[in-house]
Image 1: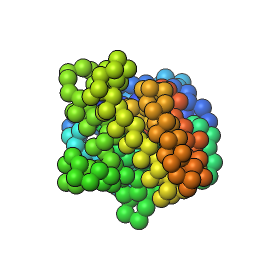
Image 2 (image 1 turned 60 degrees about the vertical axis):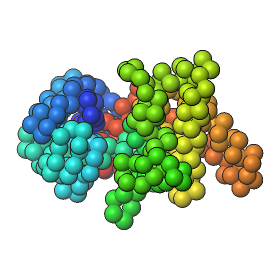
Image 3 (image 1 turned 60 degrees about the horizontal axis):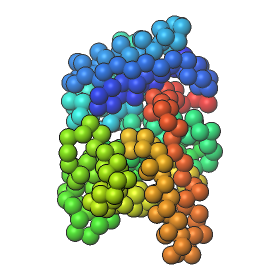
Image 4 (image 1 turned 180 degrees about the horizontal axis):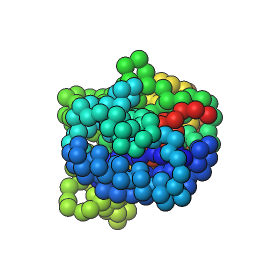
Length: 299
């Protein structure tokens, strides 16, 4: 079997795939922990639990998707601030503990590969991750494309609002400050467990500030789709991440934005942007599946 682990800020989502990668045989979730000792220990436990839940047997390979700066070739996590990791040889440590080769990949790249596989796509695809931040990954013919220096898809740090909010990267008006869930929640305020969902509730009730923020979010997501298609001309943009769980509450306004832009621009109309957008199937473990596939990239 092939194992895939999606290590997030709070949980590890682990799956076991059949040897040919066509079937998810088990799925388990455990807490991520914080710091290298806890994260490594919990990742090992999640992998073993997923393997046992799949019926046991030989582990052929293990892939890990993790946020932050990752050296996929070396298996090193250079920096993952939300997990308290810095210069951790995650691939090497877990290879020794699990007795199988372990490959480490950036979480968005892993999710990109998983979405491409689970949706049965062909050709070219961009995966747009709308979560706390905004980032994208590219897949062509089943292979992740990282760019010359591994930063392909960092569209969240493209300024789109002149003189806008100062971003954590040091620039102003970045796409992430408009369409990133963390920034939207910060602008909305409040102490709700799901602040963006509560913002959408308030917009549905007619709150003017909530309506404006929801409109900005939809416009930012539409801008991200335009950027991905106009720069890379991918056939499909798959949208995932935490905000995608809003479903039609997000995708309806997003498509409306794209349709309105098409009415204003014959050029954009010719690109048929709205029809090229697809959501991740709700609840599907795209990042864990993609990590498993990245762990052993054979057909």
